[in-house]
Length: 72
Image (cartoon, one colour):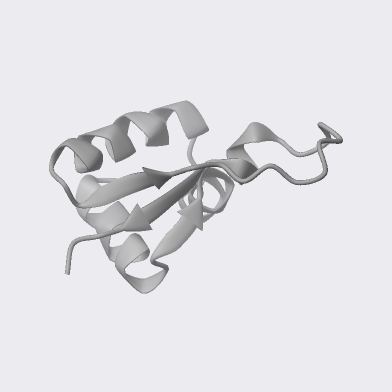
């Protein structure tokens, strides 16, 4: 997996969770975070504020970690 593949996915799915990306690319969330940080530094992706649900703590943190494609 390379940065270009992540960019293409985010272009088609403008807001995606880390879990969705991890499942799509069959990749470790920590490895994806590093690549997403690189895209953030280039101004192509931004990490969105995590929205908390009812506070039950049953959601995996990766499902609440959202990334948005901002490069047109």
